[in-house]
Image (cartoon, rainbow, N blue to C red; front, side, top):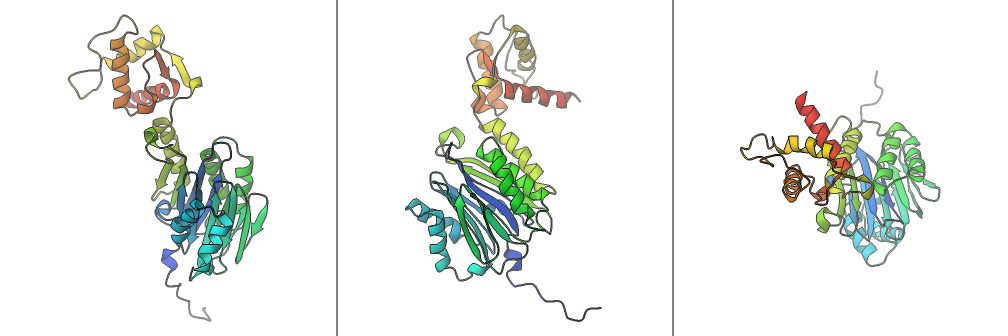
Length: 323
């Protein structure tokens, strides 16, 4: 029996990004990025902000986009992450309801958790600083923060895993996200996730700074889906590693010709009209056209070699069709 009537939720409750995130800087590559998961749809459209050579921001709880837009502008003008965060907080009418992580292009990091955010809420920064509600903490390299968590294990796991993980910044951010969920994650469950990494001219053919920009709008397991999409992103947008280039042997040429002579399946004209006696220009051009058609643009070659990663995907896709 209820002794007290249930209390209505705050009027802004549905606007809150109940979230755990990590923002980080890679001193080797210069990459800046954010990984985030939430029981909130399209968290990638709200929480992560980043600019190559400037900084990265996660603004959550009752999210205030000023921390993203104005925060990056302040960082671009020379403010450190803690300085930029404090400047914006001074004009924020509701800092107690915000949670923000920020890192600049020199690795200075800051995390703020307002004292009106929902339990469990807090953060950690590189260097071992731990903060709860009503605290700003500073550090170096990264800031991890969360609200409405099962316990502090989510943030602790993210921080410890990020520090131990190897590989690119994106690899380490995703590893941290996986570890955060293993620590309990959002008390209400999972719904969306995002990964944003910026690098100067790191986007498609150098046209943008958005090296990686992946958003899972809504999924039963958004982190698993984020991992799947990240694997696809690497396949279609990362250029070949020299270690993955293999020679097209006579046997491999015959295997590829079987595809080039019969595809595209829905087109009367195929990539090759007849088998070729060698790795001549006709064969290499047909192979390149086929790979462009299949979206392996950044892995196309004309030097009698083929990218092993693309080749494995070509084989896998045709095995799936034959089943």
